[in-house]
Length: 194
Image (tube, rainbow, N blue to C red; front, side):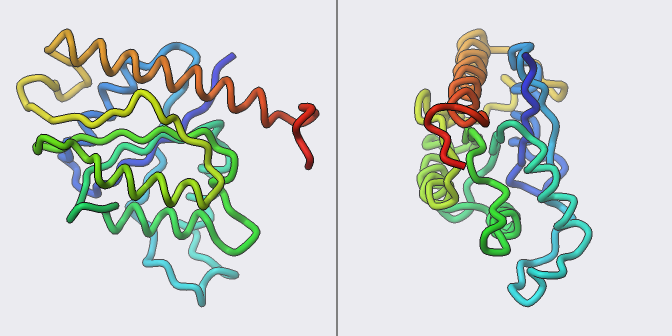
């Protein structure tokens, strides 16, 4: 069975190292995952006054999240936290109250940085947000990638065997996690109370 996975890139930059990382993850994903980007670029700034009559970009974004079987967040760390555009997207996707598009979506978080801690603080902040939004998270393996330009090619090639093996393992573990979560939240499951 193939699962549709939407991925969000936390940077708006066209040459973001996390966009480069996303290409590697798409290439290394197991056949059971069909990955496609859900863009956050055109979303307006979140405004509670517009929740009931959102811009078309918001409706498109929420529909893409809801149409995905799972989500992968691929993001840099800005000032030791979640980049503003990504947090803005999450705020839109979670509103209005009672229409949280992220609920029950099996989610993975990964990010690349040129620094040694590789987005660890951003990921910690993101885990708190996703927990509040009832989005189950892959907790292990954790994936804090120190980006080296000579390792990652423009089309998703990974020149270092150890890095490629780790990223392939991460995607395999994420695929297994998606399968587990969806099997527990499927309609008719014994534990389902909807």
